Structure formats: C-alpha cells, structure tokens
Length: 567
Figure 1 (cartoon, rainbow, N blue to C red):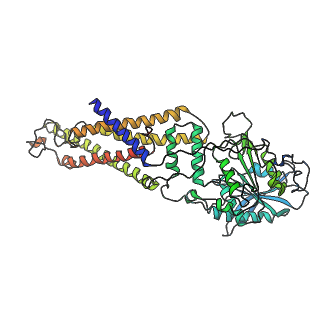
Figure 2 (figure 1 turned 90 degrees about the horizontal axis):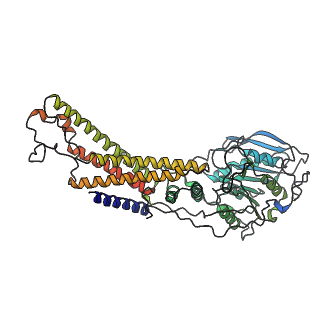
Figure 3 (figure 1 turned 120 degrees about the horizontal axis):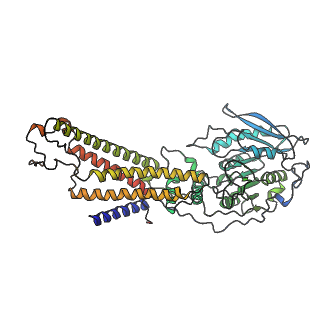
C-alpha cells in the first residue's frame, strides 16, 4: 500500500508539473550584451559650470544655476475644452530679466497627482535657476485604472502649455515639457501635435510599451528580492493575460509613431539605481526612432549615480545595489543644475558633448514583447474557474457536512427509540478523511500562494529582502501542494478499492437486500424521512462536486507554478 501511494503521488505530481509547464508561456528574457558606455562620469552639460550671474537665458555656458533667484509661487486655474478646469502651481523666478524666460510644463507620471504634492523640489529648483515652471493638477477624465487614453491626455496638457505661453515674461517659443515615467508616453504625442514646443525633459522614460515595461520591472523587482527561480514563471502569465473584466488596452500603447514625428531636443535622465526602467534600451530606441534618426538625434542622456526612479538620492550610505526609498530623499545635486543648463543653452546644448554621461547603467535584460497566455488562461476564464471551483468545493463540503449531521441525528433518534444506533448511509468507508484533507489542503495552498505573492510584492516594492518569507514561504506553499497530492493519491486508491462506489448503500454489519441496500426488518431501525432525503445519490453528487472543485483548483495552482519540478 505504501509503494502504491508513493507511486500514485509521484504520478500526480509529475502530471501537475507537466500540465503547469505546458499550459502557458515561460519566462526567459534575453540579456543585454551591448551596454551603453557613458563618455564621462561628469553629468555637467557641456562640461562647463553654470554661471552665478544673470546671463541671458540661451547664452550657453553662462546660465544661472539653481538657487540664484528667489521664487514666487502662485496658485492658478487652467481652463479645459469641456468647460472643466484644473488647478496648478506657477513658480516664477524673481528677476529683472523681464522678458524671454524659458518655461516648462510638468507632465505627471502614474497615479493621481495634485500640483501641491508633485514635482515640488524639481519645479522650485528650476524656477530658482530662471525658468518659469507650471505644475498642473492631473486631470483624470481620461485616466482610470482600467482605461487610460494618452492621446486625449496630451490634449488636456495642451491647455497648460497654452496657459504658460501667456504668462508675462515667458517666451512662448521657449516653452517645453518635463515628463516623468508614464508621462513620457504622453509628452511625445503633445510634441508631435504642437511643433512649437521647444524641448522635452524626460525623467525615467519607459519608452517601450507599458506591458513590456511592467514585465521588465516585475522581473527586476523579483530578482532584487531574491525570489526562487520558479516564481518568475508568473511574470508572463500575470502581465501577458487579459485581466478579468477587460480594459487595460493602454498596456500595448506604442509611442514610436509619435517619436518619429518630432525633432525637438530631448534631455533624458535616469537614476542609475532605478530597477523599473529599461534605461539603456529606452535610450537606444529614442536615438533610433526620433525624426533626426541615424544615431544623430538631438538627445542628451544623463545617468545619475545612486539615484532612484525620481532621480532622488539619500544622504545616508545605502550600499551597492540598494535603491533609495522612503523618507529623507532629495533630488540628485547635479540634476536640476544640468537640466537648467541644458534648457538655457538651447539650441547649442542639444548637441553639446558629451552626449551620454554619468554613471554606468546596468540593464541586465531586455524589455521584450510579453508572451500571451492561451485562451484558457484569459483573466475572465481563470477567474471563472476559481469561482466555479470555490462553489463546487463549498457546495460539496456543505452537503457532506449536512449528511454527517443527519446521520448523527438518525443515530440518536434510533437510540432514543430503543433501536440499534446505526447511522444512515454516507460516504464509503475510508473516503472521508483523504477527501477532506485533499480539498482542505488544496484550498490552504491557494490561500498560501496568494498570501505569499502579496508578501513578496510588498518586499519588492519596499526594496527589501527576507529569506524566511521569500524562500521559506515558497517552500511552505509547495509542501502544502505536495500534501494535497499525496492525500489525492490515497483517495484515488481507496476509490479504486471501493470499485468507485463512493456512497455506502448500507451500514457495515447490516444484511444486504437483493438490490444491495440495507435490510432493516423492524421499524425501529428504518431510516426516517430526513435520512432518506440525504441518500446515496446526493452523497455521490456531493463527493464528485467536491472532487471536481479540488481538481480545478489544483490545476490553477499548477498553472501558477506550485507544482514545478523543472519540467
């Protein structure tokens, strides 16, 4: 019996491993083999210090540095096409220059954004360097979790551009954009539609479509958290699938056609410690896809040592490979200086040497098209399977539990009437325990997997490592899966021994009737009506409902990697 149980368990585990491997895409990103080599570690634009005087903006090499001017901050209201409006914060340098100042409109990254909370340090620093900055509130009419229209959002930001052009002292032909992260999918649309825009500053630009960037970021976050290799299989299955309820079409937005329509100068900035952006790949794509093309696009690239996604650094020593996060961060000290010098120095600064400078970027893998799962792994289908499995497990379990309660009531009623305390028929002998363990542990494995993934996600987003959670948790989830498989093997062998008659038609020790039922000659031992209603057919149906739900849930667990055996 022990050998048969072991062999059956092994067969079940191998079957689940093969099913999980064959059911969906794997994950094997291509490594980056040709790294960008910055020409200099010094990020200074043009290799010259900004002047501390009030040289006219546009005279390259004599532009004022951040902190040169006091800043006047004004709350403004920006009118939109549909009669709506958004608030904003206008920051102006207090200067005698009077006219001809450059201006920057800030374009938000992911999430909601209020002007009072966003870009505060960068907008103030640039304003103190003689550039008028406008941070509008993020308009959310075309922005939800499920639906984001980057083209329409570009139209919303156009109103902020028009507003800034009308500000006294601003040269309307020297207004540009400062876009961060997700905003770098919006800014090229706006630039292509408004050729009068003078420049773009891109901070942490993904460039590749959102789905590719999401998979790339997930891969890097998981590597930084030091998860087991088997967890990576979830990346294409989670990011590549169509999520339940539809939507998220923006995940495949391609910015390249918009890049091809513009030739304005671009300043690209990345934090070299940012694990979420394919920075080297993004730079190469922009160099190739902008209108100038041929590797001679007016693009200036800076990689800031020790900086994170927002080009923020910490004053505390963090050690190699640690991403700055949490409180106590501030802009990299050279960032605002470099942006100000570049903006003031246009058009000469657009092609100033060195073109690419700063820390050595270290993109390990390419952000590539994400493999798409098969139809049966579509989000709606997976959710439907999980819901159906839960309903079957719950219905089968409740029915068998009710049957057990009825059997106890029947036994007590018979004993009270002086008859033999014999219960009504239920599951065949030996099936209840392995069935309960199989179903219960399978559900526990599913709950454990969800809890594990949530714990890993929290660690990854906080740039933390915890071997007990990451390694121990994965082992624990997989051990639960093995226990469920062994219990299923025991259940299968006992069902086979019972000739697959899962409901007992009589109580052990009772004589059989010709039809295989229970011969109870006196009224005292006959089942009452309640016992008859919970008969063998209902018990059989409940058994197979519980078993089917457990099998369905087990296949979902196999799909998400619980039963991987290197297959």
